[in-house]
Image 1 (spheres, rainbow, N blue to C red):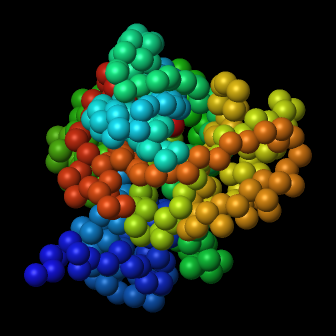
Image 2 (image 1 turned 180 degrees about the vertical axis):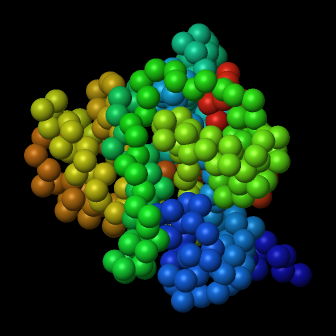
Length: 359
């Protein structure tokens, strides 16, 4: 007998993609507004979104900027013996301070993001624990200096053309304020009820204000103002996670670029502007820009390198590493390319950033 899992199809039609794109532009947009813009009923939009959510294809969530808590975000590459990479990746994925984990390069490299709670925690993992693992060959870590793409849910623009200019404008109305830069020092002063609000938003970024107010034991007006204040201060952000199975991008790669200092900003923004790039950042270390590229085939990756990267002035070297398997994605486990049915556990940002991810 064929199982329900085998029968599952991750196919999204045009309407599904329009709904997801609308939420990328405005993660908490009312279903009534999305329906009005798309010519659908509120019930139809809600039903379709909940199906995508239930099937592990789309999730609206909240994350925390590491710098809002005085933490450093690291990109770490762990070279392993091939037989040991899965165990290393699974162990890293269980950590609350690790938001994404991938197995790369034919199964011998594990790459992950670490937002250490303190310098001591980072040293413990990077200097003591990982190097002593019998299957680990070496470890290299680079600090994130600046994010070019990845700080806004609309940064991945693979479905940008499913909405026309008028629809995009109507979804964005009232105009959203410019996203504030991530704070460079700890600015979050927790108040009573904050933890309950943040826990709920990590699990579901579209949690109704009435539910947030009940969880926090406060009024509807106060919870609205507090959420707005945390967003405006750059302490938290809302995001839309799209499972790899939903996009059809089965051959993603990571680029490690070496760029002349005077061209670092220009190249970073040029790479980030490409619709296939959901994340790009300036790093410390020999490769000073990292970018993830969501491509459907390796031929597409080749064309990106030759057509988009090739003409850029200032790129003096590059490395391409294919992603073999994503183990954790934006704080959520991945199973067969889908977001895990089990939600991420609530977090305690007073002492640690969210599992969902930090930037």
